[in-house]
Length: 409
Ligand code: LLP
Figure 1 (cartoon, rainbow, N blue to C red):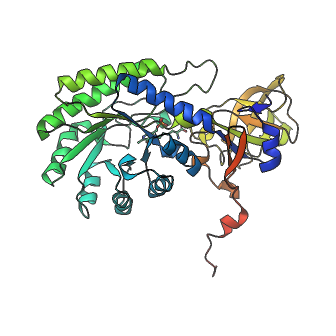
Figure 2 (figure 1 turned 90 degrees about the horizontal axis):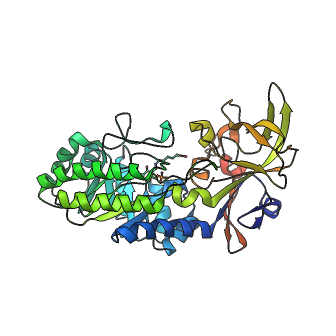
């Protein structure tokens, strides 16, 4: 492998150093447009809210704003970045979790649509503000994800209002003077099975049927969350988006009719599907070792891309300019944790000091989850736009880290 997004990866490394995240504008646009057109084909009143948490880079948000997307934010910083990118308030959704009063104040200030995680969140919101419209994130009692750590629905999930309490939550909101409503769920991430999405739509709309009958009104929107998966390995079958959109829309229309829910807007909140395959991580080999096993150490690690250490997630890795895999190695970072391993027992070409390792599908939940553990600096980010490279986030410096200490220390 020599090129990423038709770009000479060596040139990027010479110019910007490693570790380096590299994103491609065209891929982000294609992914967004594919999602939007698939869903709008079957249900024209669909809004695509990009889940900012997947990749919060301002340049990426600007691309999506230009394309006409909406956003879902999970913190004041994500709200501010979205505003800076040009998103107007009607395109911004705020979905928090254990939202503090200051989180909610930030959402109110940005005039975002607030999607509440719990009845207790409503009480905190009402303590200083009466919104015109809200939704609750409902836990429909089931969830599914690519692995356990990314299941966000069901009885083990810390998110949302249990569906048994949904009517109570909405009634309380109505009694307090809120007049306009939506309903939301987010049950898990990296799902590749179209029928699952139809199944959860059925669940949520059945719950919505009871809630809105009791309220004597209809929802303005039904937000089914994100969770649209991508194949990280060749043997995985990509999500059939067309079928997903068709099944979801059919279920949506049928259940809206059955439960007298009118024709609400359908909202989806994709993060991974838009950003993941639009990003590569470039790292440099810093040491190789033949111990009980063979190790290839690189200048990225769990501090740069946490997914493998946190969930056992696995990405594809290549060595720039070398194609013939020789023997199995463990690819690892420099962090003092034995979980700092990107991949175990993978066949790579013979790695030498200074070789560049390319990690695929790192555009979502990569930089966004990077840290300074072991005092390591967060990487730089570059965007490829029509054959041109542009720095979109500077590499962190030691000065950045020391800046946080008070002067009198
Ligand atoms: N909406 C809400 C409220 C969410 O919490 C999430 C993700 C999304 C949308 C977007 O989900 P997506 O379309 O990307 O599946 N760090 C994990 C993924 C955690 C997802 C958390 N919530 C990973 O690296 O796989």
